[in-house]
Image (cartoon, rainbow, N blue to C red; front, top):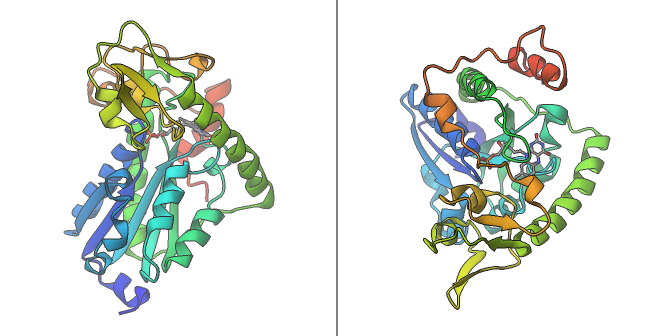
Length: 299
Ligand SMILES: Cc1cc2nc3c(=O)[nH]c(=O)nc-3n(C[C@H](O)[C@H](O)[C@H](O)COP(=O)(O)O)c2cc1C
């Protein structure tokens, strides 16, 4: 059955995602819940759990594939490209993409490269979305803004889910300047990721619980001679830094990149006393441009 025939009868969806610090996972879970409202069976899997055995994955069971990732320097993190490389050829399935980022600026970068790579594997991207989530680097957003972004994502995902089920074609613009910018920032990010990982170290607060070792998506952290060693495969996802219960991971040169005191999103979502009207049409200053994202579709 061809991908267009399959999309008419959607019964089962596979969603793969990468999420360094939980934002994209929350979004993937929102998609899952929204599809399940239409009695569709959804399997949702983090890519690091399947990256090696994805060539043997049974794609035939599914009618559509979703793929989600955070934006790192206006591009997907490198682990996403490794995942796509490992996919078998000729899957022949329609696909939708979603990405999360801390700022609606430039749609979080172009999607052309990822679309092209997926096409080589027989995946036809017909729908693309972006959801703004709290930034997990440098500045910690106000809890009210975190909640506002979460509720906005939930509302938008309900709309997008219906669009996907109706087979609506919705692809973001990929102008040349965005592609050029993404190439430059991408190069800087891959260089930065390598050195960020290399310059990580455990402070005296580390009690060797091994949480960072277990959670690293690229197995880049190991106990060697009773101390933590960091390899060359860091993807700068920040998971190890924020997963440490003692806030013990520090960076020799790039501590400014980490949110002091850690990154937490779930508290803002679940705490009923936190309101969600941080940004309004009268907002001035840096967050002013978020208002359009909160109230409109940007493509
Ligand atoms: C290395 C790195 C680079 C980032 N670059 C961008 C960026 O270019 N634009 C942006 O809006 N957000 C950027 N962010 C913020 C994340 O995209 C955002 O917080 C995302 O929702 C995190 O998702 P996750 O928790 O699933 O990893 C960056 C985060 C990291 C760790």
